[in-house]
Image (cartoon, rainbow, N blue to C red):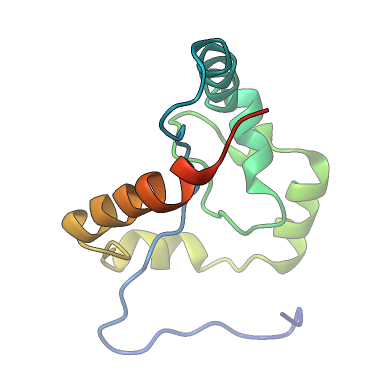
Length: 124
């Protein structure tokens, strides 16, 4: 987005939040599950979550409470300082949020992944 681009919202605008999901496919060997759970645990720590600010893609930031922009890598802070807009936080607070899928459809999507994609993966 060009630096000089302005931001506006249309009437009845809703935020559709984006996120990252972690899952372990069925039939992964127990020793690998242990390693994957350790990785997931690390990924939820504040220092790892701070990196998810990236270049503003997950602004206003991680889902883990207490992880602030001040904890993000300098590159992330620089990009947001240059391209962020003063009204982003007000818009985020004032506009309603709607999930991308209903809970039922989200569960169905994860189930489909687990049954059709994850099950076909043979861990090495």
